Image (tube, rainbow, N blue to C red; front, side, top):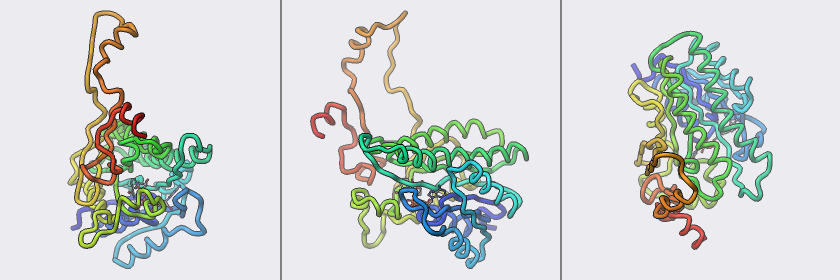
Amino acid sequence: MELLTGRVALVTGAGSGLGREYAIELAQRGAAIVVNDVGAAVNGERLAASSADSVVDEIRRSGGSAVANTADVSEWRGAESMVCAAIDEFGRIDIIVNNAGINRPSSLIELSERDVDAQLGVHLKGTLAVSHFAAAHWSRVGRESNRAIVNTTSAVGLHPTAGGGVYGAAKAAIAALTVSHAQELAKFGVRVNAVAPCARTRMVKESPAVLALMPQSEGFDRHSPEHVTPLVVYLASSLCRFTGRVFAIEGPDVAIYSPFGVVQHWSKSGTWTAEDLAERFADVDEQVRVDAFFPGGVASHGTPPRRTLRDLSQNE
Ligand SMILES: NC(=O)c1ccc[n+]([C@@H]2O[C@H](COP(=O)([O-])OP(=O)(O)OC[C@H]3O[C@@H](n4cnc5c(N)ncnc54)[C@H](O)[C@@H]3O)[C@@H](O)[C@H]2O)c1
């Protein structure tokens, strides 16, 4: 018996990059897979064809079970069709990996409406839509243990920096949804966790500044996508005892985030005045920026790990 024998998983954006790795490995570990991919360029524009079929062929050639779905996660009915494909083909759905993603980097000044709609559509609406249809199905068929949703967030959302923009905001929102959906879906036996991956995929290769931070090394290649997959398999399986948690992984380094928390607290009897607040806050850093997942990791972008607004305005 493999770890995921009898389970059925939907992996969105599984035609290339990390999603392809996840789909192949989940199948290797015994799950039947819906391989979803619309066939999009990194900026979200449609390609002539989806590579979902070739990933399905690869899985079947290795003895696994898979079916292709080429719908767009950002379309409500498209998301429904993916969940229905699992139920129609395999009779159930146990695991959702919300992985499909695009990137349209832009400064706030150069931002277009299309940049906003496309990125929020694929990341935020896509994650919501696919999770919604799975959750609605689970609520209809009733509680069963060991269901899982694995969402995809990013260092760009968890450690916001200039230029992170809509992509970062959508990824931060996915981290928030992860916590909220974990609480809502616990009664149906669903764990909801998120992964911030770090790997040299097509998306990274199209961004020279990020690619420069992930050089191909001899021997152990820290940024090879295959290092991310075991964490996704773990979160998808009964080995996982977490829900509502955000994980980061970069090569051999793995981390669990704390939720947003209060760092300092003040109280007085009655209402504060603006002047009182100014006095109380006088010794507090204007802004704290923590850039790195791991000391020296890619997400540090070569900057010191902790900086204040004063540092930023003086140095940038
Ligand atoms: N590679 C990294 O270091 C990194 C870091 C942080 C987050 N991520 C996230 O990981 C996920 C996978 O990214 P990747 O690096 O493998 O990129 P990738 O470009 O190789 O793969 C993304 C896949 O998603 C598909 N896709 C795009 N829009 C879609 C849509 N509307 N419906 C269905 N499929 C769609 C694409 O066709 C593509 O196959 C993304 O959510 C990305 O934002 C990646």
